[in-house]
Length: 124
Image 1 (cartoon, one colour):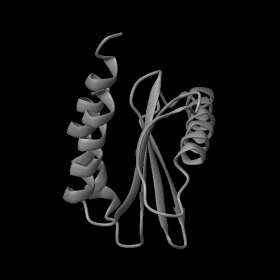
Image 2 (cartoon, rainbow, N blue to C red):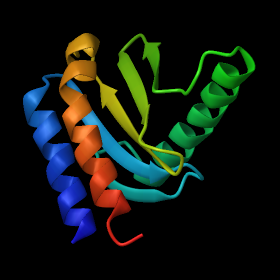
Image 3 (cartoon, rainbow, N blue to C red):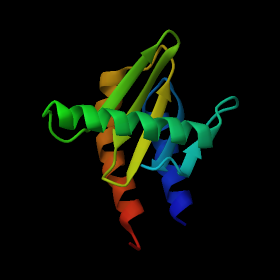
């Protein structure tokens, strides 16, 4: 049930924000929880890379006294990858193409991130 709920949230965000190509939810240790990815993106590898990037970004934020990390965005020549900290145990990674409006993504994703956090905390 949890995976279906997560998949529904990821699909809804993809429908709301043009340019999203792939999404995944993972534990901070890199283990995949759920994914909505296209051909060519290996979800387990994406989860592991996102967790590694989040860990480094969290350490940087802490070492520079920037407070709790909320998100990190990596820009490439063909799009971007945004990683959102859901809590201390999970993250969401969103890949987008060149047409992704990153500011709209940040705004539209906030309610969905709260819902995903609630889904993940059910049964803890």
